[in-house]
Image 1 (cartoon, rainbow, N blue to C red):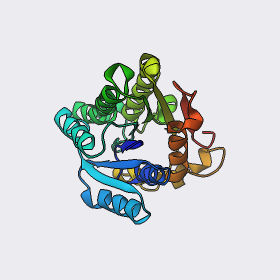
Image 2 (tube, rainbow, N blue to C red; image 1 turned 45 degrees about the vertical axis):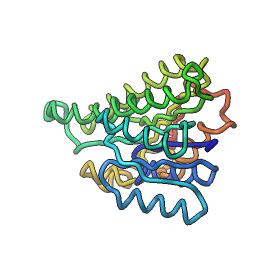
Image 3 (cartoon, rainbow, N blue to C red; image 1 turned 135 degrees about the vertical axis):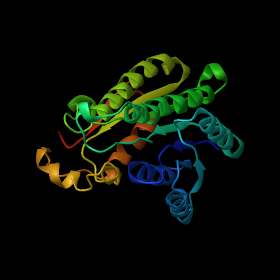
Image 4 (cartoon, one colour; image 1 turned 180 degrees about the horizontal axis):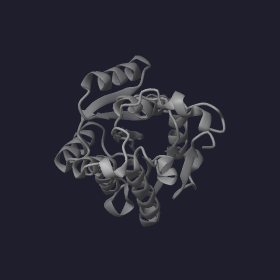
Length: 248
């Protein structure tokens, strides 16, 4: 395969929208999921029904062994990866720092930060010219929370996404000469299921008045930004943090 992409957290929300759009752009798509196999299988079904190529790959990105097995499965099926979207992530219930636990913080950073670093490491090992690869592109899904801070809600999530921003900038410089471009998108209030998992299903509707465009965004709008950054149209773009936040 000439164009092989892994989308982590690809079974719903921004990940699912990205997987579907990437398939339309000619990628063979590995749709990663942690637990919801039915949702991942539905994304794969939709891609195949449209004539695309896809498979579901299970892995909790916080666990190195599972990440290694996932990449080995993709290697065996399609060969070297050419694109990675680090989208898998979690939030938790809105809380102040003084009400949070260490267990919550560890889960937040294990999945949102270490998981992205693990997947990026394995992608670099396959894409980098120094490892015999032909280059590629990585897009990390950060958040506007990284610059807003999410006071009184998710300061730990904001801190994790701030780490993703720093990681994006450093890795982009590190692997540019190896033919790998690394960028991030920073979505704002996007209408996806992640808000319900944090106990605030109506968050986008409740806060949309704070957005200069006076609305929340869609997963598809973020997906278009991600897939553009992966494309040859962005061939001279690396080390960028692209805001997809309606001006917020």
